[in-house]
Image (cartoon, rainbow, N blue to C red):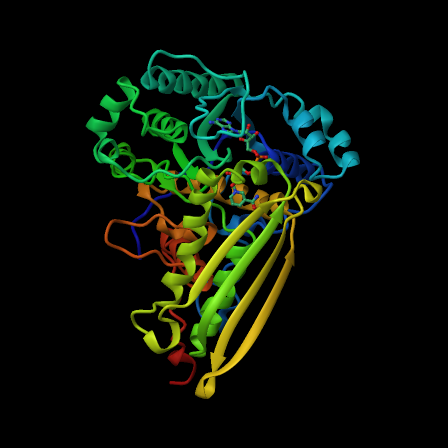
Length: 436
Ligand SMILES: NC(=O)c1ccc[n+]([C@@H]2O[C@H](COP(=O)([O-])OP(=O)(O)OC[C@H]3O[C@@H](n4cnc5c(N)ncnc54)[C@H](O)[C@@H]3O)[C@@H](O)[C@H]2O)c1
């Protein structure tokens, strides 16, 4: 039994996204479409998922959204920042993810979602240049402007609560450095315009300082630095990241645990993709791809545990490629060639060809992360939310812990966290009670 009291979701929830691109527009329009009965929230655990409570024989399987207090879709207000001025309707018309007739039907609902000026630095995203960008003498000035934006949005829309989900482009690769180690050094760095402070970190800092939850859908370091994880803990704010787990890595975290569960060995896993949207264009720059590559590579190593199983997984070769190929737009195609071995070392191969729609897979994840982050804050959870690792390619964890990548363990962790908040028994799957 827990003594957690979750404050009920009353009033409006503001969801703000740095980045008004393919993912965020598909997410926002999708929610509007669902409210109007023009589509179903497929892919969203908060909207479609059930949760078992008690014994299998109890037949208690409520919908998650009926079991815990989540914001209703009708109570959500959307806002965004971007370096381009197009509103949500114009963005959606351009990126060709959703059918034009659906976008037209919802025009009235979405054309007022206009981005606020971005905090942008071309050193971190060299392939983009826009004019809808904030000016400030220091990075601290920019953070202050973001806080003003958030508070203005909140007041204008009459929101009670705010969540920020990073849906902007993947930034160039950086490693944690001294300025990221403590809040004091970080704040000094903001005042001194330290080049190691990326725009996404300024958004994260501003959000935490204003007292709101932050989730990071891209692989950038962003909030995954000691200065900001500690800040979130101190401010009582939930944070999570990194990088939505949607296509190829989603498949990897389904298949790899299965291979390992049967003690089948792996010689190599080659993954390649073609992608033609703006995300693909940004990732065509080697410094930005490096950030994505690190995030995509980490899952297999952690799932397979080569140190524990050297005969099966030592030195397996793992390659990930993303090729920018404009004709495909948002319709990414991924190929995986998996070289495995079985009994007596006999070799076999598995081929996966996933023709997916990137933003269609990502949109429900943005919704769930926003709703669960808001829930976490109302439950008094603060700092890193490991129970949300289900949604991420490179889950954030406490120092010294390895991240849990196996999607089935991640789901169990998520559901047990929800049970825990409501004082329900955790489900261990031991099941002896049915036979005793
Ligand atoms: N779609 C997926 O399946 C998926 C999966 C994992 C991660 N992601 C990540 O989600 C992010 C969004 O993907 P997308 O397909 O919507 O990309 P997108 O290029 O369509 O949209 C990103 C938007 O962010 C804007 N932007 C860039 N830097 C900004 C800044 N500093 N402040 C405000 N806006 C800024 C860009 O102008 C663009 O409009 C990317 O980082 C991508 O890698 C997507």
